[in-house]
Length: 66
Image 1 (cartoon, one colour):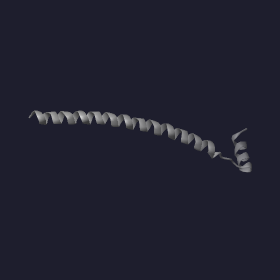
Image 2: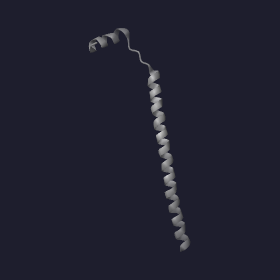
Image 3: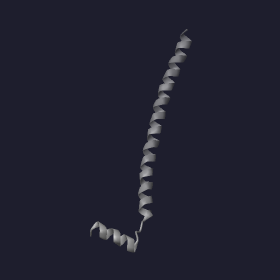
Image 4: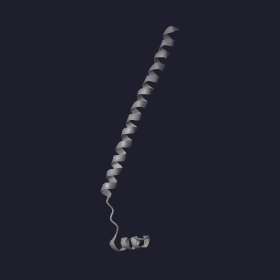
């Protein structure tokens, strides 16, 4: 079937879109992205907490030693 024939078939019969599969695949992609983003946020917050606690402990140690 050539392009012209495909275009004419669409013009005469119409074009049907199935949004069910589109929304399903979009939601699956969203779940993957949200999972990775949540895990990265968790890891980042844990690392930042460790760094901040180490800084706070060293700062308090410097004040106490004086």
